[in-house]
Length: 90
Image (tube, rainbow, N blue to C red):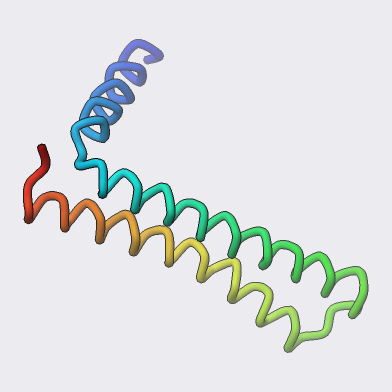
């Protein structure tokens, strides 16, 4: 099982290494945006839990920021891969 997993990971790595440098840079920027939004959302969840003592509206906003961070990451990765595929890499 472990050998099979490493083979699949190697294939994914090889495919991503063939991407255009602009696509790679865009995905890196997308990861930074995701991490920033995720950290902000996590901090808001913690503040809601410990400071505002489970304020329902504040908790909803905090959870929405965390969920939105994953949506932003998915859109950026899918968009970058689609643009790279349509306009061709290297």
